[in-house]
Length: 264
View 1 (cartoon, helix red, strand yellow):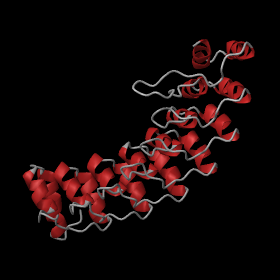
View 2 (view 1 turned 60 degrees about the horizontal axis):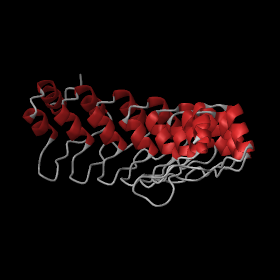
View 3 (view 1 turned 90 degrees about the vertical axis):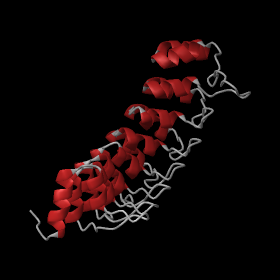
């Protein structure tokens, strides 16, 4: 479709010309395997590409601001995902729904946190985005920021009052994820914010246990200094057993020093 292509390319003049000549502002392609139209509309294409001026023209022409794709994605979500601040701002000012969900329960704020788009995160939070919303597996904006080592995004969410202990559906907390992925700075940020260093997953594995099993010595020491306890898993495994089994000699030594009362 000519209008779709012009919107995708950010060609404001051609978009205006096509609309004036009668092009359908919400005309879209069909979604494979579905009878209803896939809403890959000109507005969605312009928002995804970050063409804020085209977004504004399409909205003025009556484009449906919250129309979803067959997977439930909106123009605001795609603009947020790609970090297009200007497009995000235009959409919000025009009344886009801030927390409209995709089929997997993603929100614009959650995808922005996942990608670390700080300016977009700030705008979405200011507009009232839900900082503790979770997608269908229970992961929150804080969780995905931790998972992807998005340090600035995490700090912004914490400053806004986000829950640092909100765990995924299997009990994986942000601290556990930081320990597992060896994200030292992120872990320190969570601990400073008061996150629980002993929260275990559903199988009893703690952040300390996963740090030991992966051989993450610096993470392990940070957790111990923050009050992590030597708990066993539901199968009776200890952090020392995990480190020994994995051949992580430096972690084994660190655990033995700690249990012996040696802190340096």
